[in-house]
Image (cartoon, rainbow, N blue to C red; front, side):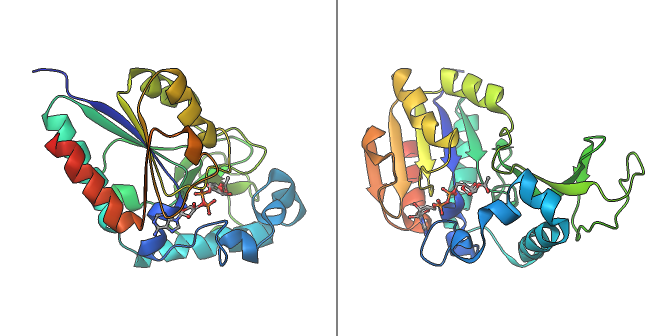
Length: 237
Ligand code: OAD
């Protein structure tokens, strides 16, 4: 079979906004209500673990009642279509929700971790965690109480899968960024990495991101509208 196109898609909170999850930096976003230093840094967790658990418990509970939107579905369908044609689609998401998986995407890397997983800060073992976390919980792996934390990446910590992402970009024919403001690195730098490799780069967002000028193609509107439209056109080509 001839080799089909390989796409790397980077997603941010804008892709989940129409499923009912808040973005971070929009007017009513999460960082307008919470100080990220208190709830999304190792120092914040050390200072007040109960506050941090409460923040992530609230967000984890939201996962149960939400469904993927047309943008997530279009990406899952595009992955299946490309795979059938000998190509591939990798979703690299900054999101800690599970909506790409719920939509049927199989090839997903959560570079900022996952809300539905917990990790022990002592033995570093991680596993599925659908319920609440608290300082009273014992690690199911090493038995120590009080060190369980959400398996998410906080500010000041290294994102996950950076080697895999660099490898996928090196093999990609197209890079697409969806629903992210381009404010947080290293994700915000992927477009420049891709351009250095001469890969065409498309931005699909509600409004121009901080990196809009680095993209070779830009489309603006709601993810639920512009992602399916772009995916249809890409498959038709
Ligand atoms: P931001 O809140 O910074 O950006 C969300 C982007 O989505 C903005 O550019 C919006 O214009 C766009 N947007 C909003 N609604 C949309 C819609 N319906 N369709 C398309 N686009 C829409 O969120 P992220 O870029 O995801 O990290 O933030 C990146 C990281 O910063 C997060 O992973 C999180 C945060 O702090 C950590 O917590 C470590």
